[in-house]
Image (spheres, rainbow, N blue to C red):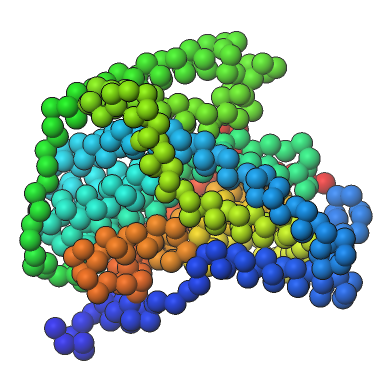
Amino acid sequence: MARSQKPLLHRWLDFAERTGNRLPHPVTLFALASAAVLLLSWCLAQAGVSAVHPSTGKTVTVVNLLSPDGVRRVITSLVTNFTGFAPLGTVLVAMLGVAAADGSGLLGVALRAVVLGAPRRLITLVVVFSGILSNAASEAGYVILVPLAGILFLAAGRHPLAGMAAAFAGVSGGYSANLVLGTIDPLLAGITTEAAHIVDPSYSVNPAANYYFMAVSTFLLAAAGTLVTHKVVEPRLGAYSGETPVVEALQPNEKRGLKAAGVALLVTNALLALATLPPGAILRDPKTGGLLHSPFLSGIVAVIFVMFFVPGVAYGIASGRFRKDSDVVKAMEKTMNTMGSYIVLVFFAAQFVAFFSWTNLGLIVAIDGAALLKKIGFTGIPLIIAFVLTSAFLNLFMGSASAKWAILAPVFVPMFMLLGFAPELTQGAYRVGDSVTNIVTPMMSYFALIIAFFQRYKPDAGVGTLIATMLPYTAAFLACWLVLLVAWVMLGIPMGPGAELFVQTR
């Protein structure tokens, strides 16, 4: 087809593909950002930049990290910045459970069973929906579902890149939507709580703070992703000519393993129900008897670990994958080996977050920013929309949701609290923006892996190819999610259990 005959959208996406291939590695980005914060702290301290805290009335000044005391703090805290970084331990503990389920083969077989069992006319919807649900299982959606979706689409006579794009859109574009809590929920809640303490030291955000909103989002994004695949992505890709692989049916040992995993999951859930539902249960709040601020919610990472580990081991034993205890350990080690790049990234991200916090730059920006927004009257729903768009834009350059929120939360959570918005609403708005651009930024840790999957069917595929393919999903997800968020706020629906939309501050 001649270039001039292509629809405008297709020509624009082709242009994005040709021009989309140069951004620094996330580690390099954090290293440069850390150096920039050090330099900025010196410049602003010399300029005497300060702000008056609205609650305490005290003057907050910029701390110079290039002063003798600052340099000593930077040097002596390098290790503790890394080991004390909240996302590190939380993610690694949750991943140990996921590693057992992944190493046993449970995650791959479960995803295969779901997708293979779907009617052909619903395959796109099932792929996107499964992708959204799989993001609770960390890398399983990327490593298993994305390539599987390509094979399934090809076997159905459809373009394999469309299948992988649909899966990737669900796994990563719908990262914050889910019907179950994942590792990201307690992570962000902890960071939000710390940020809220800048204004109200007693404020606490529970890990399920955005659950109602994100559960509804799951169905909305699944429908939007399906529509984009059918109406935009597949027509642009056209027909595919190549070998059609055979999609293997489930083997008897895999079916046996799935049954064992299902029983194990039911038993685990029953025990969890006994520990949380009855009055006075051991995982309820011992003081109030409620579930909010209870050991169950504060220990949700441990629950996630158990929910993946127990069914994973049960599957491995029943399927014959695990024959002795060392098999379990080796399987977990194999999956955890993939966390090396994450650990390297966390080291540099932790330094940046610590340096930024020490300088007081976040607090000063929050104070001055809130005052400016009040002065110009930029509040309410337009402000929430602007924050979502800001989050989406920043996500193009900073891939880690937790590291980015650790930077943004100390600025925007207190700023928005001073304007009357609850931290839970601010966190929810951040998650919308953070999710929708995951699929079009090379900062996303699995971006290179998805490109490698694309290259199986399109050898010359690069960063631009993937970005151009995924941009329609980003646009659709952003539009749908913004409409849902605005409607949610206008109706005054809580974001989650015990998570109101607005607060009153002095």
